[in-house]
Image (cartoon, rainbow, N blue to C red; front, side):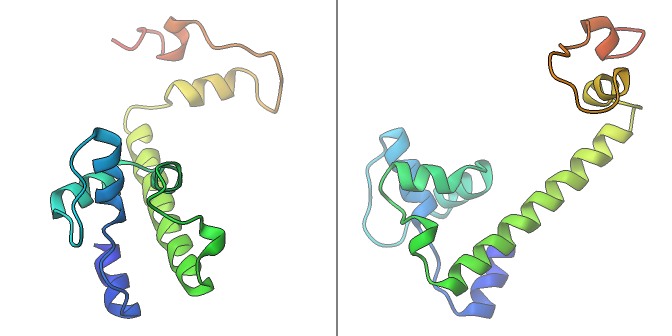
Length: 130
């Protein structure tokens, strides 16, 4: 896990903020100290908007207040997630030919406003995605 490797390199202790955010959002009892690992993982790996939720619930501090090293490590961590997500999405999209987004882009190349969605049958190919 990237977080585990990061903690070993930086010496930073485990973060229990993701579990606390999930507890607050779902109404689960909030516990002091160490948090249940499944809750931490569910929130940390299950949601990509964790920083927004941390700040909205008052559990986390805004990134602008973090030490520079912590901010740099977090940005690197998020970049790894973003590139991995993009690579997986590209791989999955290429398996069956162009997907709906690629068909839409090919219908009118370039940047245009007011170009609505493709009709359902065209978005998924000649067979309508069946």
